Amino acid sequence: MQGRVTVSVAKTIEIIASSKKSFDDAMQTGLKTAGKTLKNISGAWIQDQDVTVDGGKITEYRVRMRVTFVLK
Image (cartoon, rainbow, N blue to C red):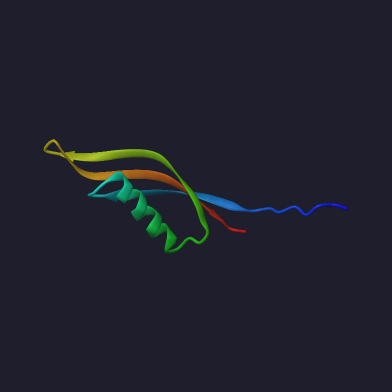
């Protein structure tokens, strides 16, 4: 008797999100915004982080992340 094979199809997209508060807030904002149009988000990989500095102070936190969502 042969076993059943389960196959999932997933897609990964790149998202850049920013926040005036923190890297964590930028990640949460990016995922929340992505979740408005993408269903079945299964993970995220933070590819890059950077900040904008003005007058010696951080004014913006940015993250570039790859978000994976399952299609099937």
